[in-house]
Image (cartoon, rainbow, N blue to C red; front, side, top):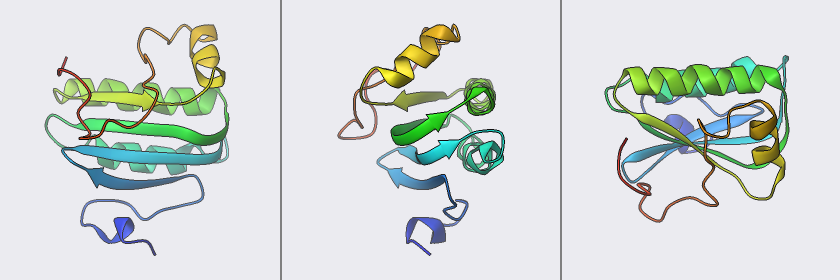
Length: 127
């Protein structure tokens, strides 16, 4: 078990996600494949990340190998929940693959990707 998984309120790392605090943000690192078989593993982390007032969540997709519509649905639900609680959910990715998928799904405006994790975890003004 990783030290991040032992932090109270955070789910244990699983085969496609782990959560950790970084400054005032919660970072959910996503890796491997997120599809219909694993989307709920990611959802577990995002549900915990957005279960507080004014959540500030960074979803780090830089180690992601594959994302299908099941994964996009989980991201959309989590982003809506973060907004309902007065917070935000942002995506971090490198390269053109994830932005291309977001554009094709009509979600690029909802999820303008960040190129890397902000130094202090904040990256800009709150919405």
